[in-house]
Length: 263
Image (tube, rainbow, N blue to C red):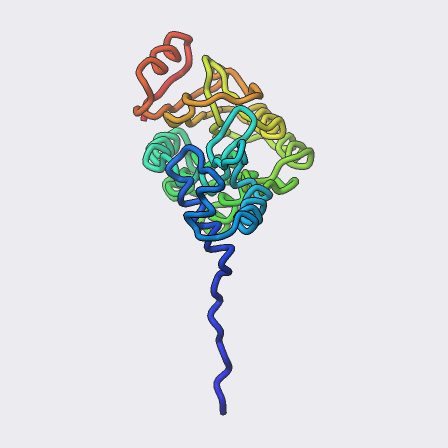
């Protein structure tokens, strides 16, 4: 009896090119589109099709004949890009954050790649209930023993890899939790900023729903600007900042009365 054929599920050439483009962007900065087409040995028409797909998924932005995955005042870098940056710092912040959480608590946390790292230490505080709008968090904890997971619904956003909108905001407001865990795009002065007003509404709702609030900030958050103000850092009960942050920023926050902890 002949064997059933099992053709390999190879990725298309376009998918391979798009992966190569994202890897090239990990170094930061911009890539000139014409140079990219030459480097990948394809026509400009082909490279523009690939870039259109990446842009539609929120992975890149185009800037005057070039592309970038870095954040700007109006554009947040994609989840795929952010999750590969500053990983060691984010893990240190997560380890510090878990010390403020106890078994039996209900914790709401956002879609950030920084707070996602807390899931790697969740077994230290189970049983626990986790509410989140972040798809990677829901996927990671769905089968974790001792963790009850509550998805906060809403409209899916590819770039953030999470759920937002009125439904998500209303869901958060229907709960009262012990702890809110979050990060944000940018810190300027004593304030958090982000590019998307929908993100602002979700983070503010999380703050209002929690008895205790914890903010995780890696050193890169002090290097950029963003359009929308989220909150005053002094409103948080614990602001955990990477020890890799420039001393000037640490001194400024301390002098401003922010409840600062270095990790």
